[in-house]
Amino acid sequence: MDMAPNPVPSMEINTEGKILWVSANPESQVGEILRAMEGTPADHVASSLECYEAVRTGSYCAIVAEFPLPGCSPDELLEEVQRVDSSLPVLIFDAQGGFSDVVRLTKAGAQHFFGAGFDPDEFTRQIDEVRGLRSLSGSTPAWRKFLVGNSSAMDHVFRIVDLVGQRRCTVLLSGETGTGKEVVARAIHASSGRSRLPMVTFNCAALPENLLEAELFGHVKGAFTGAANHRVGRFEQAHGSTIFLDEIAEMPLDLQAKLLRVLQEREFQRIGSSETIRVDVRIIAASNTDLGMRVDEGRFREDLFYRLNVVPIRVPPLRERLTDIPALVDHLVKKICRSEDIPIKQISQQTLWRLSEHHWPGNVRQLENSLEMAVALSGARSVLLPSDFPLQAAAKVITSASAPGAPRIAVPDHGLDFAHIVGEFERSILMQALEKTSGNKKQAADMLGLKRTTLAAKLRTFEAA
Image (cartoon, rainbow, N blue to C red):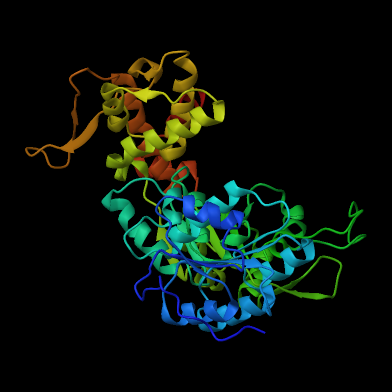
């Protein structure tokens, strides 16, 4: 049985960003690592009662608890800490613990469990993460590592992620292809208490309609032809975590009804089974098309749209956040070079200028692909040059003061590709008309005052380019 706690001389009321380290062995390996970690102050207590008192009187970003502790089990300490502060991350060490302890304690709310195979690097990473998530002292939260840039266009996204991260509410991400909707989803997941489990991702357009339901909800053996084994679906895999449903607009109507039930009741049945499975899942959906328009067209359920659109976040296209390009380029080049296991390449100022002038219709994904190609084309050279990027010269469209309705091109000093610019104008106009007419070429041609054969010929030209 623990005795009454002794005063903790190093304890302070204002201890944001500090670790509370609970250990009966102050000379342990964990203690050595905590003392060696730069910028990670830790208060040490030797018993569970001292821990509870410290949590009540201080403010900490995480608890690191080493077992065995006299008169206290990991389950008891976790339960008592959560009673005082349910959002406080708890990292547990127990060299005698097994896999069943990992499952039980993480389900009960432990941030991480370290057993006999203690990995100091993973411990250090976990400490960095919880300090970022909880610190109020001005340091960058851990989820911000997913989102690069500081433009005003992204500021709204940052603020909403920060506000909704710890909530359970459903989020609907909208934005063009390649803007980074999945990256925003990962940031939301990382900012939540569910981040101790991996986020489950699923692309609703990736499978034929007859396979989607089995993939999402699972099936039992013999449920249909080819169901040779029992299968756990994505929703069941995401229990206690987050599921990201990309391209949600492509989900068939009959499956939308089943998804609506999961959103409303948090339960479903596997194909071929009458057993009801309850899940605790946070849903983040994404679409690169206007779901409201899909509802008007009768291609998306209105009730499902409102269930998904609880917290809408629009991810801006790259052309609206051009000031983020230097930071994005730096981040992506480092990522590419590390994946290729080569020295980090530098970017010349002229190259950055050229990348910042480009329109980037494919958004961040196109930028990353262009950088990956440039790294390959640069060979052993340590600096990326404009010649490594075979991009068409950019031009800005502005309105003439003398003719407000007429577009005027601002020609860069280094010139531009006339045919390409005119072609891009034509392509943009045709695509807008086709989108407004839901792909009806005759209606689009009428809208633009063209013959249908002329529009079809131009489309064939663009497809062949």
